[in-house]
Image 1: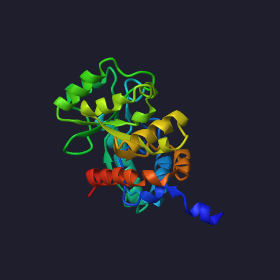
Image 2: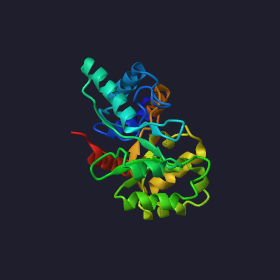
Image 3: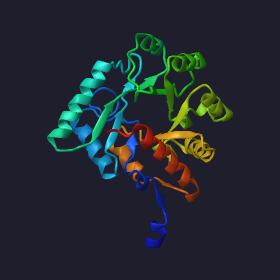
Image 4: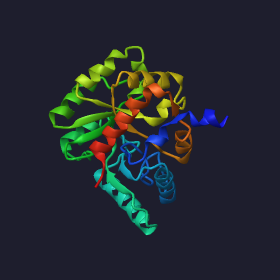
Length: 248
């Protein structure tokens, strides 16, 4: 039995030194950590898995989560101070996960977006029900403004499962694709896992994020295993994530 267990490839065994570019660890501003105690618990659990660098990406989504650079920076400052008080040396950068909704064009025009880096990588998402009718226009506007849109969890947009060729089209339109770690399990359903593995096998992902909202997510994250044939591609996207977004 022990030999069988040892033969498993656990995703978290690849996490050492990895920068998590998609998470909801900031306190009280979206559907992730609801208070500073939950934030600290999430950070500590991820630290134990080898993650100490975070680009924090709370939702910015219409009236549901009407975050601004001010609300995000305030929450990040609160978390940094609390981490320092416990001598936790995790590094945080404030950004957001932007819904490409009716409000997004206004944010783009106002110039109040929070990209990951100076080269303007920006995490975006679209509705799980249907893509915005002006998706290609929005992506053109983003790339024309110099941004590099990172499309969060493309495998979870099930309306694309029947036309998987559109994922390559999204890349042609300037998107890079970010795999959700939990999609490698049945957490979001078997069809999402199947698509995640298909996109991984085709080497269409550039980056990986945990999308952690809660301790329940981390509990599931620890259990994720993968077949050996996917190891090199997973190592590649984790390495690319670290190299592009490792904090100093």
